[in-house]
Image (tube, rainbow, N blue to C red; front, side):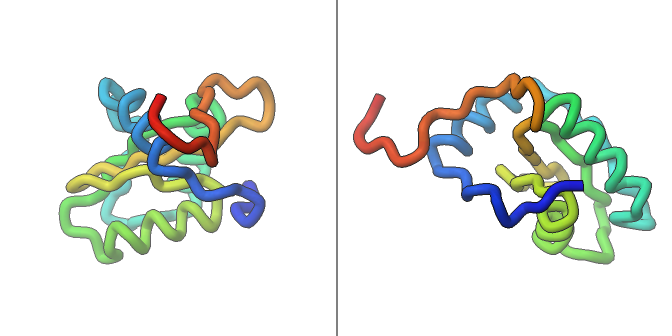
Length: 112
C-alpha cells in the first residue's frame, strides 16, 4: 500500500482529462454490504496498479457516506478521488512502474 502524503493534488485540468478518459469505463470493483473491508481494499489496490484509473461502484444504502469511503481509500492506498457521481467513485493512482496515463502539466496558465 502506498503513502498518499507525497502525491500532489490533481488540478482541475487534470481531473477533467481523467474524467474524459473514464467516460467509457465500467466499474471494476463493487463494495458490498460489509463496506470497505481489507479484501475490497486489496482488490482496489490491484485494479489501480493494473489500470491506474478505475471506477468503484458504491452500495446504494451505504453505512458510511461516499465522501468518507473516498477519504479512507485515499489514505489507505494513496489513490486520488477524481469524481463521485451517484453510486460511482472515480479513482486515480499513477503506477510506480511504466505509467500509462499522461496527465496535463500542473501549473500551466492559460488555455491550450
